[in-house]
Length: 144
Ligand code: FES
Image 1 (cartoon, rainbow, N blue to C red):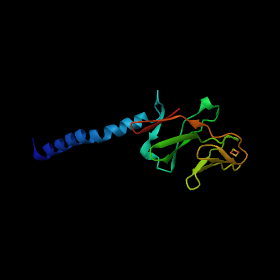
Image 2 (image 1 turned 90 degrees about the horizontal axis):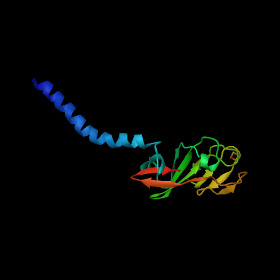
Image 3 (image 1 turned 180 degrees about the vertical axis):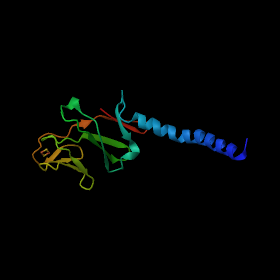
């Protein structure tokens, strides 16, 4: 075997061996995303939600009577604590956004404002944002 060919095959083998060890968990996490188990629907890794910040996810919430297939917003108000709410405004269903600075959900359509717990603060909305039940397991966030 020529030296160049040997080194090439050795490199491929090492890549398969060690690259697989690194890539396998990433693939497994990707496969988990959107997967529904007894814990709920996997929406993302805990590391994707900054402490004090938010991240969005897609997940219909039919059990709460929200007919639009909007997703939600997951918050990490303090380290290791995760809360998730429907991002559909309870007035007419416009998607709300989370303002980190004021710690409020804001609706762009008619100005309703919700607290970080989903409660109505002001505006025309009468009902709070429905909350998802959140479970964290092995660094993955699940909602239902
Ligand atoms: S849809 Fe949000 S305030 Fe009207």
